[in-house]
Image (spheres, rainbow, N blue to C red):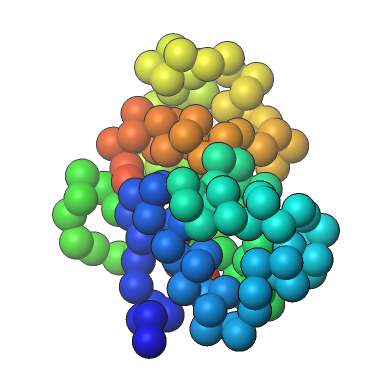
Length: 146
């Protein structure tokens, strides 16, 4: 039986997390897809390669009756986890490093309005972009379902 408290640090491991939670819930792919308002092939792709979008992961979690817990660590050092929404985490990490939105945008190769949109929740970046933003702040992402 999968461990529900296991933390998944690498985005590609999220597919296994989705698979394990779906099996634990006793759902076949098409039933989970129906709950999420998605096609069955999307669930299969997510389980094989991980989600490419934060919104997809959120919809799957809701279909499983779970919440996504977004957590970060700094420089892979063990320490307190910081739960929150993706935007809140990004803002907290950016401020903790004393980095402005403009500086983070330059370091990550994106625009400052994109950073502001992510922090406010108005924009939903791809999972890859979100990980890059956190990495630019020297933080690492860990996700789990509760």
